[in-house]
Amino acid sequence: MKKRKWLVRLAIILTIAGVAGGLLLMVTGGKDEKIDDALVAKVQKKDLAVEVIDTGKIAPREKVDIKSKVAGQALDVLVDEGEVVAKGQVLLRLDPVDYAREAARADAEVAQAQQALTFAEQGLARKQAGLADRAVSQADVETAQNEVDMRKASVRIADVAVSAAKDRLRSCEIRSPMAGTVIARGIEPGEVVTPGVQATFEGKALLTVADLSTLVAKVELNQIDVARVALGQAATLTLDAIPEKKWQATITKIAPAAVKAAGRDAEVFPVEVTLAAADASIKSGMTADVRILVETRPQVLLVPIEAVIKEDGKSRLKKVVVGVNGKKSTEKVDVTVGKSNDREIEILEGVHDGDEVVIDPASAKDNEAAL
Image 1: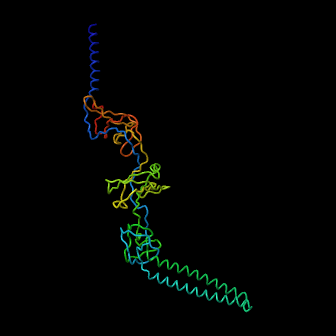
Image 2 (image 1 turned 30 degrees about the vertical axis):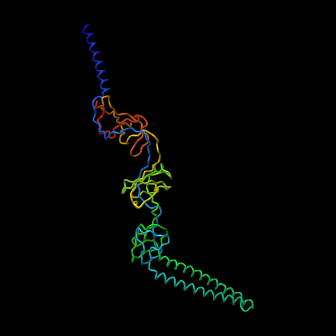
Image 3 (image 1 turned 60 degrees about the horizontal axis):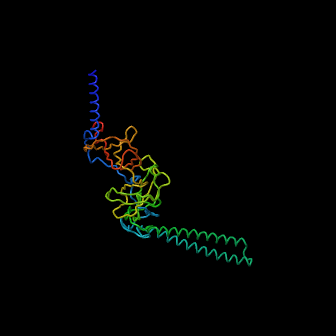
């Protein structure tokens, strides 16, 4: 009987000691876990910028490939790449000799047709006078009238021919249809220009003129992202060539229908983002990282997106726990996530402002192993 009472007392003492030890372990924080401070981030309450991100190419909003209406040999190329030109300025001259001869022949044919018409009209007048005196018949008058009508048609045809010939002659001077900067030159003196396709024999435009005062970034969005953007939305651009600088921009054009993506089996929607201000450092053809702001979530809890662990269909964070003695460990906590961008993700439930979490879960020891 005494032995049984002694065993009961011993069991009670061990139980109390175990509970006390467990409480002490919880209060002191247990075994200290090695956590790299560089991989720890605080849960912060701030604005979240929800963005559509894509890569595009810088291009002038307005440009024109200048091509020839006529065939001929280039005599003078009067501008080079980088030169600023005015609307109507002569950029290129083709050899006009053949077209000048053609225009002269057409002028002569107009004069001949006009002279023939004059003779026909004089003949008609005589016939009409003879008809009054009954010297000629009505049939003779009608024949003379037909001759006049035929000569008038010949004059009209000759006028059209001379107009076309003179237009071809004028086309030997190729002028800029807009004010801007020459951004490409595909012709040299002595080369032959082919008409019809309106390009050189190499298939290039003769010259390209662009308005560099307004630049756009051209991106191609998939059907999910294009549904999130709208005209007038703000965007931020960074250039691969100038990564330290940012440019503000606005969506100014969204294609109404999808097109086939170049080089891949997909359909995309072309979108243009216009820069608010351009400078000489931005060149047409540069690669741009485009971030379109589609929503701002004000004052929400955020953590680095790398901190969220996906396990068993749930989202978890490794939260840093600090004991009263300063020892650190981690524990996994289930969280509810909201919207995100490529850097941060919104946490709706599970942690509080100021909590610390491990950015790279693999860099911290598992909490169970630490305990």
